[in-house]
Image (cartoon, rainbow, N blue to C red):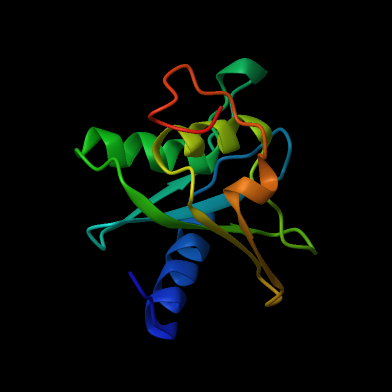
Length: 138
């Protein structure tokens, strides 16, 4: 499905709005994410830290979990927004979560200063693990 610049802008703006809700008192690395389902719906997430590091939730994974809880499991694109000086790709765990549902997803990252970068998941995770090869790449 071809996207126009207005749809790209709405995804970017949704990620920047989600960034405002991030809870990151330990790392001070706030992240917002906006996921576009194939249906066109936008689902957002933000990172939520915890004093027990293993209980923290990444913005990208939270957006996917929220979408799945709404019955959405097919995604075209995800936008990530951070306050870092350079666009930031998703962490390895988030890459694997994205691969479960959308091995061909487009990933865009934005900074508040207007810098941006775009990757495919294949570029960031060329050898993804897939227990069920029909759901992802092996």
